[in-house]
Length: 250
Length: 270
Image (cartoon, rainbow over all chains, first blue to last red):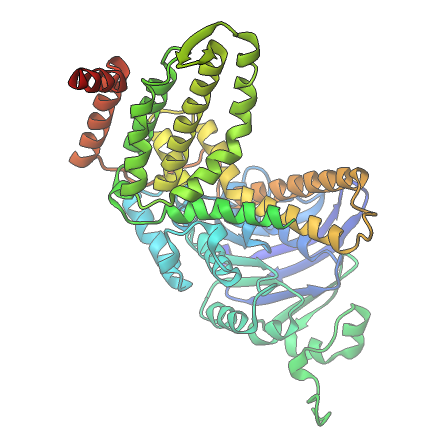
């Protein structure tokens, strides 16, 4: 299943204003893995994500998606393989109705019309949002928007799902529902987040970024116990691993 | 600030109205769009001193408001909001055109006042027809109809995106305005200079959002072409609606019904 591989080697990226966001990052993610990317604000998480489907192209180093190096020629293929869910659903849901939005990618892929209907309804059902199909996106609640944003990416059946802060601004119950939903996916999942409890729940492996470099790469459970590492990266132990706030016992 | 919020709420309300299920809402959007256009052309095509010929046209908004279960008070307020534009276009007529045109008993009315009244009447008719179109159809469906009727794609998309993001943009502006109001005291901080910074800030945020939206589009295979898919079906009732109203508009355009009615009444009493 080599076409689900994500391989990043010695990736560098400096923004036009001189901010050096990535300074040599390498890792390999294989099929079906769920990987968290964590780190302080400004550590380079979002920049890294933008490289994974070619929203940014490497200035130095390479990104390989499914064995193909990412460049202008392979962009369409890479974008189909990697589904990107943006942090703010308002950026992602730009079509007049939910249905149109979820149909956006399949129509661009040139699917026949009968199939589009099927794919769209399938994707909406997957995230439990079938009843929203005729609503305009700006009339949805935060959780509904998030669900539809995910459906709009699922509808192009990507092998790899990349998400930027999926639980940001969700209420606890909606957040829990989202986590349960993500657990049912067998895509390769790459999630950038500050929600370390979500990481504990979903991701076996974690990449820790610090100042544009990889500070650690390993099993989530091990890394989350390394208080020194976490502290040096502006992070904290997940709440679930901290002591009970009443009796102070772990 | 309260005004800004309620104005926003009002736009949303127009959209809520479009979600009703009435005979008016069930019509094909293309038919409603075309009928509205015929109505507007008919109303606008009258001579500049025409008033009596325009009056029968009131029947169109009245009937649609009734059939479409639309709130007349709300629509009237919307029309009033746009009225200053027409008012300033027409208000110079009474000053420029002082030749007496009509005598109502002892009162001499100049041509300027008559044409001013005509402008305001036309404005009320056409603008309310426009609002009824949106409230009875929804802007998205109107855009779809425009597209199907052959309006340029880029124009239709501009309109759709404008409508999609006007809520996001006003929300953002509202947050900025609120943030300023909360930290301004005794009028300090509410000045024009800060306002210009806020406008700049809003522009930058908008550009940034536009960039992110474009990325999101590219991520989903956008290649310069947006596919709008939603089948529209023309039914018998749509054709009847269009032909019926258009016929009536033509009749009212070529025969001054108020005039005829007036003659009839005076003849009866003689």
